[in-house]
Image 1 (cartoon, rainbow, N blue to C red):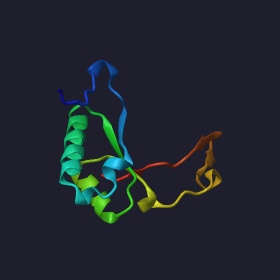
Image 2: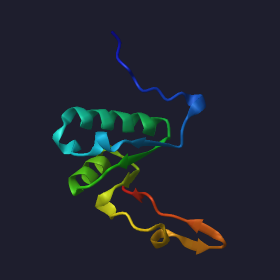
Image 3: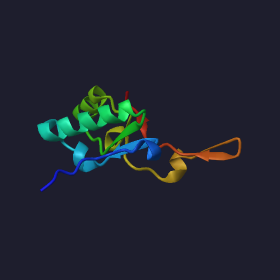
Length: 104
C-alpha cells in the first residue's frame, strides 16, 4: 500500500494549478479538504505557481480560499454564466474574455 502524493517537477512547472470544485465546494465543512488545499497552495507558492479555486459559490468559500493564499477564484459567487458576447471586448483587434477573478 502506498499514498499518492502530488508532485510538481521543476522542469515541468505549470503557470497555474486549478483546484477542482470537488475540493472547494463546501470546504468550510471539511477539515481534511481545508488542510489539503492549504498545503497544496503553500507548495504552489513555494514553486511560484499561481492557484485557481474553482466552484466558489459562497462568501465563506471565498474567504477561506483567500486565507489560504489562493490567487484566483472562479464560480457562481462571482456571477452566473453569460453569453460569450457579454464578456468579449475588442481592443486593438484582439478579443479578451473574463473567466477568473483575482481573490488575493
